[in-house]
Amino acid sequence: MKKLIHKYKKYSAYKDSGIEWLGDVPKDWEVKRLKYVLQLINDKTLSLNSNKLYIGMENIESYTGRYIRTENEVEGLANKFKINNILFGKLRPYLTKVYLAHFNGLCSTEFLVYKTNYPKFFHKLMLSNSFINIVDSSTYGAKMPRASSEFIGNIPLAFPPIAEQTAIANFLDDKTGKIEKAISQKEKMIALLKERKQIIIQNAVTGKWTITKGKHEITPPEKLKDSGVEWIEKIPKHWEVKRLKYVFESIQTGTTPPTANKNFFNGNINWYNPKDLNNEILDNSERTLSKLAIIRNEIKYFNADSVLIVAIGATTGKTSYMPNHGTFNQQITGFHSNKEVNKYYFYLFKNLAKVMLNIANYTTLPILNNDFFKFFVLAIPPLSDQKSIVNFIESQFTKIDKAINLQERQIEKLKEYKAILIDNAVTGKIKVN
Image 1 (tube, rainbow, N blue to C red):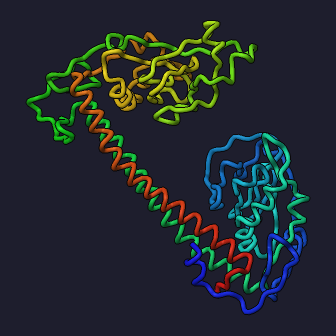
Image 2 (image 1 turned 120 degrees about the vertical axis):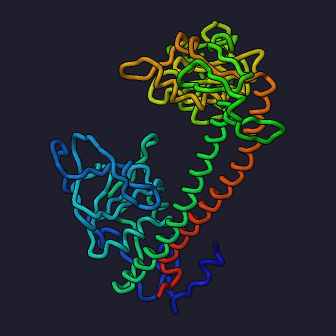
Image 3 (image 1 turned 30 degrees about the vertical axis):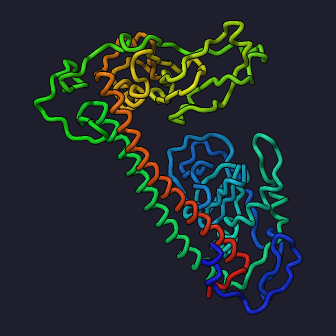
């Protein structure tokens, strides 16, 4: 990164800013507190019945300042803003929610609204790591850390003459735009690679591919038979169709110990919740239980080498594999077989999540209860095929994950370069024209 920055020229002369975090600044730059160069706009209104676009914290992308439009339904107090105002997120400032407004509207009171005659330069400055780090160091409140407008207003800034502000802003628009385009292309590549993983699972667990000795080929039509189940369609002739209750010896809904007894919690027993199932392979849970909960029979261990499925709520159908003993709450159902290849069913259930939701009966929240699971029908290959399919999927995933990791590392380097470039340009460490 340093080599990339070193290709840019330095200013001919520097002076001591007198500010530790700024260090030396170009000789003709001025140092003033933010409140003397940016005007804080404190124009509030009730957002109820307003036809203006509303910006919440979730509408501004971290680090880029991009606006993400959503359908917000809000009531209560809001800040007014106008085109070319700068919106600065004071809640958790490390998230770097800084937006240069392209329209008039309303925003959350978690944004500070600033007005300046030269918004493009100051928008970039407020996106810089140096500025964000200073603001973040001042926050108060443990759970919802915020920065005060008073502290931000008193931050000393170094800023160049107007013509140079424009040049820096235009330079950064050009360079960061190219960087973000490169990042976007790599993110699309990652999405395609992840889609490829899902295609591999689907073709392997439905019998569309025949897996032998680590290789696959399309299963010939003459080797297929009608499954007798509409949504399963055709399967290999040597596969069976079974109800789920005949596959697993253990189908168990999780539990929660009485919350009034704090001694049941914060032990060393993993207790998984739907959020934990964002990880496909489970390791450590967000919350844990103590051995006392086991002794008092409030919970039971569930076997290692099991499959967990979220069975109620917005993430119903989400599936993970639990390699070690653990337990889970009542929103999750666990499956374990002493005879079958449980890892195979992890991949199978991942492929069937949408099917399960379409078949299940519910009014508001999706619910997959034990009765539903027990009578749910699966296409089952022999054990030898199950093992071959799992080995094939994971060998393919190893290659794909390596490619994904490479793209992710390159994205991180691009983001790092972008942050360094902004920092150096807005603090005068490099000369852009």
